[in-house]
Amino acid sequence: MIASTLSFALLLGMKHGINPDHLTIINGISLNQENSIKTRKWNGLYFSLGHGLAVTMIGLLWVKFSSKILENSNLLNYTEWLPIIILLFTGIFGIKNLIQNKNHEHKHILNYKVDLNTKTAPLQLFVTGLVFALVFDTTTQITAWGLIEGQSNQYAKALYIGLAFTLGMILTDTLNSFLFVKILMLNRTKMNFKNILAILIIISSLLFALLQTMNKLGMEFELSDTSKLIFGITTLAITLSITVYYSFIKPRIKL
Image: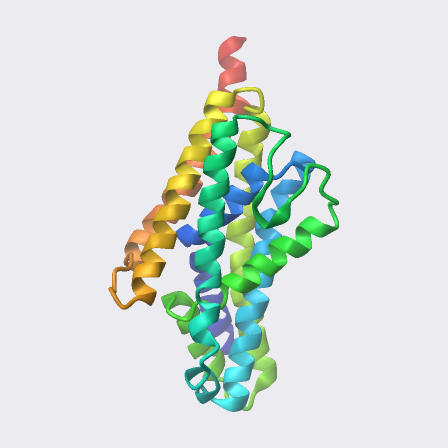
């Protein structure tokens, strides 16, 4: 029974990892960073690790104190604005960087600097992922908490479920960042291509920030789970296709 539950939690984490706002923020930060481009391929790992562990810890608190600790907390009314703010800053700084059209002379989201210490970047991505776990209306996240809560008074099993969910997120988000950074490395001299990526990320960031703001204001306008899944799979498929083309197909055409 626990094996099937862990497998479901793993698949649930993989599905949650390709949520549109996750891919947008990971790719947006990867595009805007100025530290070594090879280190950016781990951005998905750092983000999903922070996000998944936060979901796990909240789930364990849910088991310990019941859902009342969440339902009665006015703090949630404020914490759920944090991901919206990060998405807005991603879009705004993306616009600023696009207008300036410079690679090494602009500010970045979350105070990234030109000579960013690689020890600081993982922590900032980890914290960003943690902040995104504070949105409590995500279906897959709530389902994960339901699985964890189902192991009431069995904290070891509840922990395993949370870790399986985290591992699923790590698999998809790390794959995404590996592919995206590979594209940046293959096309690092082609500014037009980079600008296209920047425009897509800007649009996605501002759009998802707007949708989440509408939900917070009670307008109830949210993408369906199917739409989110299609968006995520399409994004991964496109990045994989571009990587395969530039890595294997195009070199052979030249030969």
